[in-house]
Length: 312
Image (cartoon, rainbow, N blue to C red; front, side, top):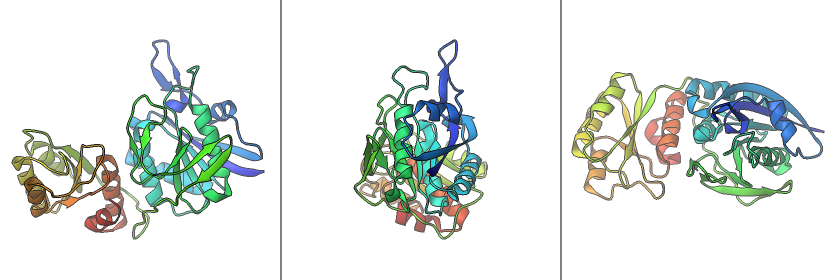
């Protein structure tokens, strides 16, 4: 019997609808495992760590999750159940912080646990299958959803309704308790494991945006700010002036984009102006994961521009 630890944090996979139809996390890990078609030959151990909507999770919770995962990974593979709203953040933080060889597989659900067509049981069974597969060893953190295995770096929730709600790099598939890896996932690494993430905020660029929000973040103690730029990384002149002022005070500013797909590059005059103001361009990652990468780099003592150049 191979031991796989299931760590629960709440999310849609663990919800039931209350008398008003509002979904709230109510189901334990034992409930989730009992409802899934567990692969044969597994000894599943459950740790109920948190019971929250993932929108309510904090960077401190990422550290709690990382500690629990690292401890459990000493006994073998780990499956983490999580809400879909912020899997992309937790998965990337965990990938940057987890140094073990045992596979860690994150999954969740788009439909509540008491829905007649709930997708959680199938996703959990798939995640257990992937975690227990010997070929998963050494691949770090993986995300398993709707029969696909994805890497954390570049993961993005792209639908609030589709069962296959994530876009990103697919590195394998799982069906009928059979795993097929098709690529090796990228493994972003920093100088050391991050700890104690500092405050990093996201500020949106939009037509007519001034620098008020950016200045407020700096005043609140942000060590860095991610700018959710327009197009391929653009902003208006007032916001660019605010970026220059923030950089002059020692606050790192990293530019991403609100556009779901495509690269960030200084193709237009505003992009060049942002670079001249001292901003760094995250060429691939969208704002949520850019923020996580910047937080992890600061917490690990890695220069922000170096981390963004390599992994952003």
